[in-house]
Structure formats: C-alpha cells, structure tokens
Image (cartoon, rainbow, N blue to C red):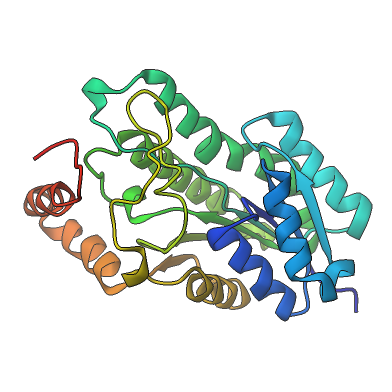
Length: 268
C-alpha cells in the first residue's frame, strides 16, 4: 500500500521538526516547509537515512503563491496528500496601544492566512484521501492573553476557520483536528515580535521546564491516528479552558496576574 503523505509547515524547528521526526518514524512520506532553507537542510541532514521519504520546500505560507507551491511540489514528488499540519506561526509580546499595527498584520498573515492558503489548495486532495487537516492553535486561541493581542486574535481566527471547515465537510469524511499544545519548549518566544516588529531575542520563560516538542508531536500523531477533534495539552492548559467556561471574569484576573509575572512584561 502506498505510504501516506504529511505536509508540515514551519517544519524547520520546534514542533514542526518534531512532527517530521515522529511521522517519518511512523512510515509517512514527509514534506516540510519553512522560510529558512538552512533550517530545512539541517532537518534533511539529521534524517538523511530517510531522505528518500522527505521533501523540503522553501516557502513563506503568508504568500498565497508559496502556499500553493508547497502543495504542487508535494503532489509532484509523492502524488497524494493525507495530512496537512498547519504549524507555521509567529508570536508577539507588546501592549496593543503601543504596538505598530503592521505587527498584528504579520501575525494574521502567517498564523491565520498561511493556514487558510495551504488548506485551500490541499483540500481537494485531502477530501480524496479522506485525510486530516490539523491546525496548531494555542491556549491563546481559547483565552485571550494580555500582551499578545495579535497572537490570540490569529489563533481564535484559526479555530473558527477550522471548526467551520469541519462542519461543512461532515458528510465527506474529512478529519479536522485543533491542537493546543500549551507552552512548549521552542524558539517561538525568541523570535517573538516586539511592539515595533523587531525580534524579542530571548525567551521570557524557562524553556527547560516546558513540555518538549517531541512529546507534543507524539500527541499530535496519536490524535491524527484516532481522528480526534480537539487536543489540549498540559494540565494548566486544560484547567484554563475548563475554568474559563464557568468563571470567565475570575479567569481574566488570574491570566492577567500570571502573564504579568513574566520577566520584562509590558504590563504590571
């Protein structure tokens, strides 16, 4: 039987790279995309024993033509698409009143529109294979996080898009998974944008105390295997989502206090 094919955007590092490793180990053909070719080449070198099952496509998913090219090159190489993991994303940390609006636009272009573009062009092939669309969201897509208006907005938008896609295709056997990893050890906070759009340059959190990207990737692969609709990881993540359903005003205050404790927080 022909091996299944997974596309992973933002596949050069973090959760994306871990997903590439996990799905390769499960016998998938894997396509990774990213803006930095040197990062993609590092992944290829690391998994050179499986290089015939791995394709790297340099692309910026916020550009519609690039997103379409990822799909086209996947089909040219492997002839099918079974799973699309919309993982590419950027973050930010700044108060909305101090933030240049171009920062929010960059977040929406990558985190939301990037997923929309890739899904649009992959969808006919995913419907044919009765495959899976995965969106890597966040607890920030369930509860607004202060200092991260652009990030939360993009993840709320992503979840609304994916939920509607799921309902539209109820009778077509399309699997749609919304995955919320919670805080995960990765470089997303280092490259996070500040108020003027420059990179933050360092993480305000203790990365070594967070869930590993490899653990997250394993959980995502299992959720794809069993065609789950939602995946919320970490106790704090699940507790936040549950508590917010019943005590939203209390959670506003709790989230404010928690995020204000970050080193260099833009608010106190």
